[in-house]
Amino acid sequence: MAPRSFLVPDDLQDYLLDHTAPVDDVQRSLIDATVALGDVAGMQIAPDQGVLLTLLTRLVGARRAIEVGTFTGYSSLSIARGLPDDGTLVCCDVSEEWTAIARHHWALAGVDHKIELRIAPALDTLAALPDGDGDGDAFDLAFVDADKGRYGRALEIGSAAGVFTRRLAERCDSVVALDVAEPAIALARARSAAANITNIDYRLANVMEWKEELDEQWDLVVLAETLCYLGWLYPFFDVAWFAHCLHQGTRPGGRLLLANTCGGVEDYLLKPWIIRTYHDLFRNAGFEVVQDTMFRGNKNGADIEAIVTLLKKPG
Image 1 (cartoon, rainbow, N blue to C red):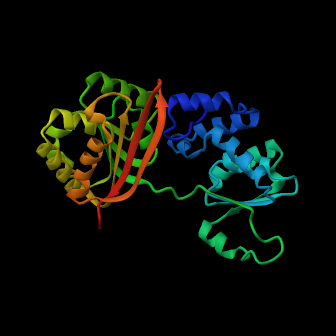
Image 2 (cartoon, rainbow, N blue to C red):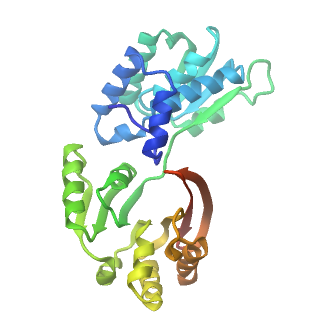
Image 3 (cartoon, rainbow, N blue to C red):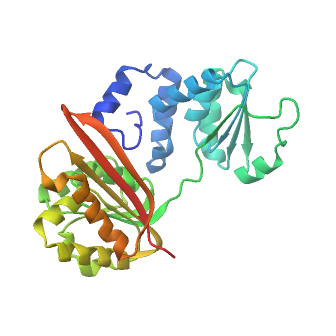
């Protein structure tokens, strides 16, 4: 199975697959070799992203490009295919093991003559590059896909069948995933086991009855649509106290991700001003907003919005 773009909805993913060229034999071999590495395969870009990289490289007429973070080489393969035959791509990585897979597939694709691989910390490689003032020294395109921040301990409140949980596990050392629905937890466990994902601890629990266990110094907490249900089932004071407990249980510098859909139905629980009122509880508890974004779209004929807020605990 080919990787897919992180957080892309199924209907959009289907559209992308229907309107982009299918992977060829070399790309399929590279995907399979990367998947065989295990959980780290989640670092590989999706095929539709590769198509976009090739297109962008051609659109800007790039002759010299640089990539920071090569991994097994799918993105570099995509960029190299967009360069002219005498173009150059400088690839920065620190892993001989992963880039050996890249080298093999660059050769199979016939683009290896365009690529200069530098095995060293990228900051050292970048510092040693010419300053760009000389003729032919400047880069026309840069792709930075390295040093993604990993989280230590993550808590997901409302895991359902674990679709997002499994994505989250790629970025965390360990994940505790809570849900109140036993069938959902059972399905999530089965799917994670089938995917050989071993760093998720699924627990059947109501977070409002689990407050004492919140104080475990989480590096990341994810709270999505569950927040609306808490607002529906519990008094406002209880939800506010929960926000305080969550703040206390997050380590200094830790992150809180809130994501809620609003609109689409005549339900006051899904009104944007209601959602923002609940989001404000976490700010008032001591979290600081890092980024607040509103996405708009249409699903099944209904106009919907999604409010995504990333917060951090100071310190």
